[in-house]
Length: 341
Ligand code: DAH
Image 1 (spheres, rainbow, N blue to C red):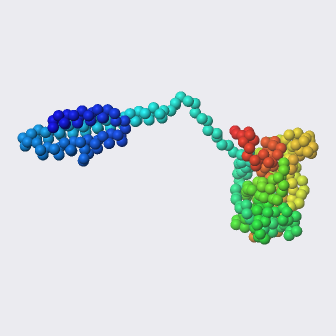
Image 2 (spheres, rainbow, N blue to C red):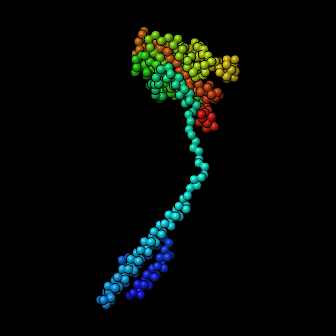
C-alpha cells in the first residue's frame, strides 16, 4: 500500500505538470481528491490491513493528501499569475502617444448677436421677458390693433392651427402679455422665434428671430424712443454709426417709424451692400397706439409708451457681412466655425 501511495503521488505530480488551465486543474483535483477519487479508493482498502499497520498507513495517506492539496493550491496560484501577466501584456497603453484634441463648441453667430443685444438693453435697465411661439390670434393681431382685413392676417402669410391659434408672426404679442400681467412702469425686451409663410431665399426665411422692446410709463415721448434706439445702434454697430428715423405705418404704433443706419461698408457713399442708398433699414418702431394700451388694461390718458421690433438675423448679417440668411440655418460647420473666438 505504501508503494501504491508513492506511485499515486508520482503520477499526480506528472499530470499536474501538464495542466494548462483552471478547468483541467479542477478535473485533476476531483480525480485524486474527490469523493470517488483515487485517494479515497486507497483509504477504503485500509480495512483489510492488519490492525497495527493502520495508523501508520493512515498517517502516510494524510501526508500524501496534504501534499497533493498543497501542489494543487500552488498550481492554482501559478495559473492565476500567468493569466494576469497575459492580460497585462495584451492591455498595455502607450501613454506617450499624442492625445486627440476634442472639438470645442462655440456659439452660433445669431446667439452672439442675441447676447450682445441683451447686454445692451440690460445696461439700460430693461428686463428680459419670454413668450410662447404658439400664441392666439387675439394676442398676435386683435390686441395689436390689426384691422380684420390687414394683409398680414392672410392665410398665405400666417401659419394658423385653427381660428384662435397660430405660430406668432412677430414678437409683439409678448408686449401684450407683459402689459396684461404687469402695471407700468414697464421696460422690457424679448427675443424669440417668429414664423411667416415666406419663401426661403437669400433675404427671407419662414422662421426667423425678432427682438421686441417696450417701455410704458408716465411721460414717455418720442424723444425717449429716439435716444434709446440711437444708443442701441451705436453700441451694436459702432459709435460713428448714424440712425435715421423715417415715417412709416404700423397698426400698433402712432406715430410709427422705420430706422435706417448708415451703411458701415461704404460709410454712406452707396455700395452693393446697401443697394446704393448708403443706408440700411434695421427696425420698426413707434409710440404705442392708445387702443393697444387700453386693450391691455392700461390707462392711455395717464400712460404713454414706445415699442420697437428688430430682426436678429438681419443684425447678424449686417454685423458679420454675411450675404445670405440661409447660412444661418444650415449649420454647415465650414460656415459656423468661422465664428469661433
Ligand atoms: N411687429 C413688427 C414686425 O414684425 C415690428 C415692430 C414694429 C414691432 C414696430 C414694434 C413696433 O413693436 O413698434 O414687422
